[in-house]
Image 1 (cartoon, helix red, strand yellow):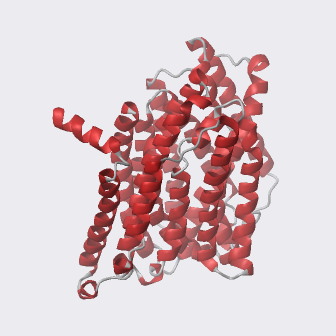
Image 2 (cartoon, rainbow, N blue to C red; image 1 turned 90 degrees about the vertical axis):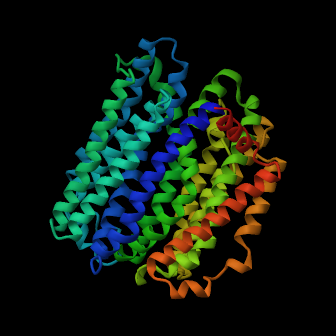
Length: 497
């Protein structure tokens, strides 16, 4: 796990920087900038959500195909040929979609807003540009992961995109530009990100060659359609929550859910830091050794990822009551929504590399019913919880939490039934128990009385300290219980330098 620890640490630094930029923007600048015009912020979030969904559909699983097929290339020339085939089909699909959109009316997107949708009129081109940008970034990120250049891709997506978004939001808040100018430059920032990732891919030695359609078309499309319903289904499901919040509750409500979701995404930072390199290593391990031999790595990744995400969720649960006091009035009372969304990340992390193992094996088609069910379940649960039961944003959050449980549960079953391996170990259960004891401690369920006497800055500091203490208790407790030997190894390495 040496290379994983090294690149994960670098990715974590980049992600931390992006998190800080996103926190300042989401929790301070954007609420002030769009006060009284929450629909504008909602439009931006729906734009990125739909861009992500469309990109996943148009990609036809090509990003996963890059990870699956390129490691098997017998020569650089063969790799270039396969890469061209993998890029060709999504490009053609996107062009066909753009052509078909010319026949759509200016109000075709109005259904995305429960409150008439006037702000969505004439935005079809913008949605297509965002989808194209996300598609290009997906392909380039997969290529950079294949070449072990994950840090650069993460830096562009985290630091550049979030930093430019913050800069634009500050300019809008200060009255430097009107909303339409802000909206246009927001799109330009994503186009610029594609350009930066393209330059990084060129510097890594990536090349396109003459596609061998006769040899590659069938396996690429066959696997790609599965990959869409595998990794793509999870991405689509998460973004459908935002789309359905806007469609059922209105664009003006989307910022409140975005606010809660952003805080919950802190829990997923270890997945984002470790995920790209783990996927790359898993694809190579499955290709060279077979999925059955990946059992030890599956257990290790599940245990480590569970410890990291559970510690962060415990930190949020413990720190949130105090942080709530310092938040804008319209964004208070989101604790249970954050907890429900955060559980989706913990559940996904606790399954380790089960998804990639199945995805890169010869039995990848076995996951298709699960992934189809995931999307259907997401739509049904969102509609029932938000519309029928009237649970509002909490219903959307619970639906998100259920997607994590669905993914982890069914993939674990398939790992055991097909390959005879599973992610569970004594250390896994030890970490889970310690995290539950820390997070559910009744002594920290409410903000301390002294927090009421502090200013907003003091309340934020107290929330961070309480959360940090909770996370530390989970990690140190797991380490003392012998469930995190990797921590001892890393400390030993640092001391011997």
